[in-house]
Length: 303
Image 1 (tube, one colour):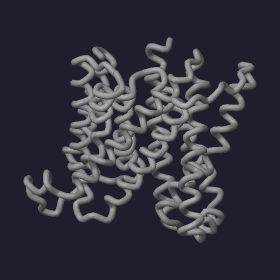
Image 2 (cartoon, one colour; image 1 turned 90 degrees about the vertical axis):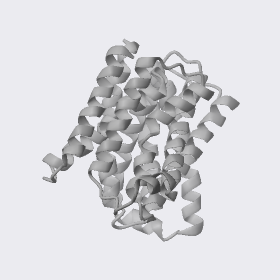
Image 3 (spheres, one colour; image 1 turned 60 degrees about the vertical axis):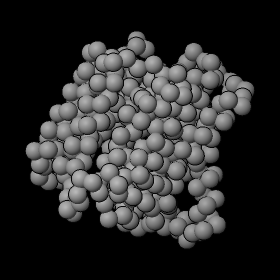
């Protein structure tokens, strides 16, 4: 069962994340970007803790001793995710936003590359083909739906936003790999439990870090959060559900494979724009969608 169960878990996580992202964008209308990011952690923490407590109660588990490797991996994952998110947010202020976000979406390929080089994650030839095709599909969707403002081919590879986008993708890749390392380091047979414990630990670190920053630098943001508490609860719930899915899938399967299948999130987003918001899509966007699906099929059949 474990050999395939990560696939539906990843698909559900990608769908929930697409919903959570849309809700977070709505929140940024009444609060700063950092505050909207904190909402994801602060309001997700009680749901994550309740999920962990339920697993422990049903199975009769006790909290294991949290050794240095686990805590260090969780801290590294939390820092990498915050850094990657900050860089991605910074891209909004740059002229060539489309260039930067395109390169940030090479996350799946970077996860495979860094994982193979430093985390002993072995990926076969079919896996690399699948990852490459799905990433290319996301890039096609991104570029097909945005105007680059006349930027030249040379500028695409020398633009500052490209470097920031790649750094953001690298941060998200490292976060995924450290999450998997932390969960596996517990050495427990129940992957639901280890993923939940890892999730709660990382969210605690992120809430304390980002919450302290806002408390010192922008305390007024907490009033904005309080005014939208109902929406914040929904963001926290969807964030926890999505993160629990990602963490569980990455405990079972290699992070690069999970990220490759997770590219389906961009297909969900594009479909929502077409059928929910009645927005028109270009031929490139539709072609990119097919490439993402094709890459996932290759991975599931031959990977």
